[in-house]
Image 1 (cartoon, rainbow, N blue to C red):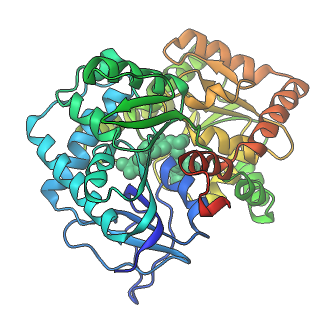
Image 2: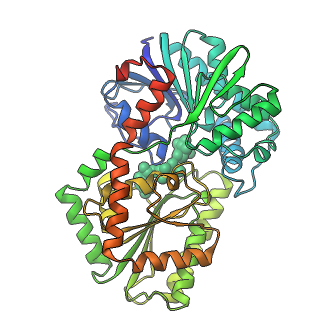
Length: 466
Ligand code: ADP
Ligand code: G6P
């Protein structure tokens, strides 16, 4: 077994099911912030990525992608249900997102979550060279830090949570709260998107483990576990260069032409997820149409909602509700050849996404709760001419960094309507001032800065940044 000095462990490998008949495999980014963020760093770094390849049953052999080795972890159908669809995405995901949907506590899922976490820890232990750095990602694998420490005390262990860490009163609802907290604190450094998360963990450590916890360090079992905020970002250079490509510029013009050149375009791009606030946004837009504040003649909305976690009950229900609502709004307010909303339930490649970002007048990003929201950052990075407005939820991690957006509380539909109108009416000068400042910020806070900040905090002499 070949070993690496840097091992990334994440539930999902950064590619989809498509392996060509000759076995060649393409680096095909799965939609979702985590794969996008890590893709940029790892494509030119000797490392191994341990993860699930999206299929059921035996793991396939996957060829290297450039310098990156892939170590697939197999899941059976039962494991997929108990670990991924169950404990990760029906218990932890809703609970960590303010319980915007009711978390499901099913006692049968826990054992599967634990045994799959053990399998990931064993795979990581196998591919990590002596003294390696192992960087574990996200809520699917919260027990891996401690399990790996038991197997390989010689390695340096990092854990990064891409989603919010909930307030103590919500975390306390979890039947397995002590194991989950201890599991995560098996790492040497636990990173979050926001400082509040580290504060929440310190309080929980004091309460549940009876140990001293500060916002940047927790003393546990004779070790010090460091904690802190490292807001994740995007590959700014990639988005900038994409958005300068002639194909993208033409495509953006074509989109505007197809929608009606005189119309103002509102755009939203999400995984089809109940945390993204899609229904609140549709309500606000439909009420603006009802009140005559916007008209189908002069304004149009494009909602891209890429299918996600479709075997999970809550996601199927959400898709049905959204499709019904889009149909209702188009039925009520659309005209022949002029729908009020264009709804696109499909994946897009990066260039086509960049074209949509360039085409929009107002980008509407209104999650009810979101660890970061990389779409907001991608939109800003794509606006080379400093035009365009970003309407951004206060409950997205990105709001702490993109304070020049039109910030909004998406639960307050009247406030959301008001903010949409403000963004539509803003002067080019105001928009340019805001956009310039957000773009300036992103230049120095890109994905490479994130990885550098995290890995040098984990291990000051890390070879990636020596
Ligand atoms: P999350 O991680 O919850 O999905 P983010 O906004 O942080 O939310 O990240 C979403 C990522 O998925 C972004 O990089 C975005 O470009 C990508 N994405 C969103 N919609 C699509 C789509 N329809 N096709 C391809 N990629 C998409
Ligand atoms: C979020 C999570 C990631 C996850 C992604 C896509 O970004 O933080 O861990 O990979 O959503 O979700 P999926 O269930 O398709 O992997």
